[in-house]
Image 1: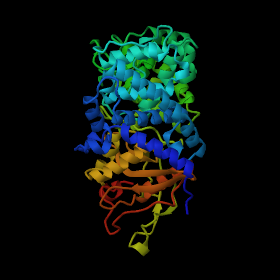
Image 2: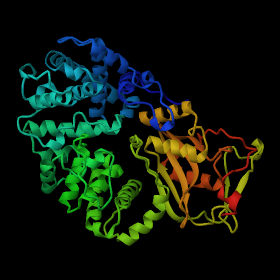
Image 3: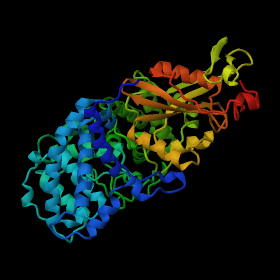
Length: 561
């Protein structure tokens, strides 16, 4: 029997999950229908109703409850590297219990002040969240001026009132404009994921320390974001004007093309502080504006990595800036950056130094076949256990390999032992094998479409899968084959890994329907990956019809091996 979490951890996780339920964002838009609003933003309608009835100086209970939830969530972001820690680590749960009262006390002060002086800040959900972030990430003891001395024009916009409050509480010295959106940062599509919270947290702390004069902007960026920030990068970041920044177009979801010189719509969408940093890094490395847009469109433009990952991002950007004249388009450069970062995640010794453009383009040809991205997609936080994917070019199964696929056995009406890798047998044809983590909502649904499984059109299954991905109790992985000269990869399996306190286990590994057991050659690579990543494959549960043939399988339908 698997050991459950302690009572302390359960309490901590309950606090975090309650907060996440209120602030994680709406149901998947990519699924062809919309979920009931009440089911995904449980406090939204109550908050809106309360704000309409709010009189000056009074904070409705619904608004206060929503703010408390957001404050607890913000505390969890600050004291953890992953929100899943609160379900497994009693020490983290204790830290959360200790931090929450101070944040709630500061939240009370902010709510009261806003109700009296800036009621417009309490009329929209999007501005209650920044107040909660301030209460958790900028302790009241560090405020540079008393909150009672703050004054605000009640006729100003909510955004203007929030900026006035930040400036009063946090800034003795003028702060970079790129940091002015930090405390309110959220993706433009409105889904506030854990990634977005962590970006907001890091740059809000930079704003607080640099604005108060406790440290320089560069030193704050080095501590909170990337140790490798140079003086030139810090200077570019400080001088960046969001109204003319090349990265502003990416904030609006428009990366453009390499030769595009149109003015970015900076005034329409708030500039992401992470995009601003990527622009500063590229400009300091001698990159052009189109390289900035490529960096922002890559995964590094929406996810803030660890210190080590951010250091590697710098080397990847340096390579791209060095070879920018040899590359054709933004999409190509974006794929290269994603390829570099994924290879480094799988192999810490992977380096970009010494790689020619020709060599890199050859390598990403097969990588790009199995890389599917979507516009305005919700990005998932990576798995909390540090599992990495697998990418093998010209991969074959050794001749003489014998393999029995669980459940595909004579006792259940299955095939029994398979022979692989020999002449005329499965696994003898070289292919590019890739097992990649699915890190976005639309990509997860797309995998269901490719495998014709329940994710394709069964809404209840979609909701359950997305919930597990958002909570990071599970991670999902795609196994594909790619062959030179073919425009589409072959989707072989969708793998779900459960992340438990005692380790990582395979919960599901399904091939194409109607028979969902993976083909034997696919199971061979799943087994290899699990062995490398120390994932327990013996826990695999199967839902299949064994009497069905392995449909859409290259070996069965085309004689491929």
